[in-house]
Length: 121
Image 1: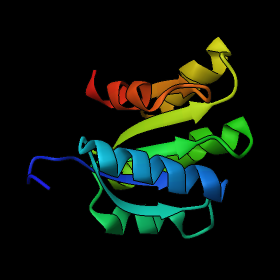
Image 2: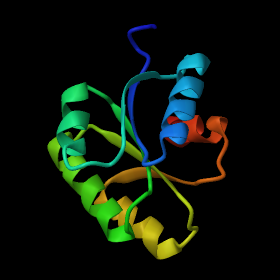
Image 3: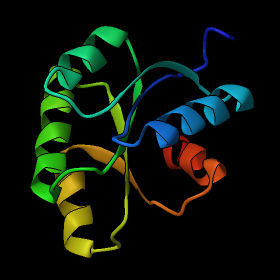
Image 4: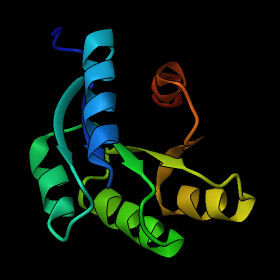
């Protein structure tokens, strides 16, 4: 992988989604997936220790929990770029996640190309 390839950490509750998205991103060569995990209590420390520049977070918890998790991770790693994948196209949820530090918000039916462009914009 080139040194300028951004490193990504994936957090998703669904194992199949984690594995498929990691494989797609690695195969495209746009990113180097440096870690994957479900959303568990030590997720924040795992993300911080990974050296990742981008966090792709699949919304698997209550909306306020997503915002709190984003806020904590960005607080710990201010340079972290967070892209949230969610099921709702609710404007208020989107705005709360942006206020918490998310730089991208994609609906769950997004393609791999849309996930990549969510970071690249």
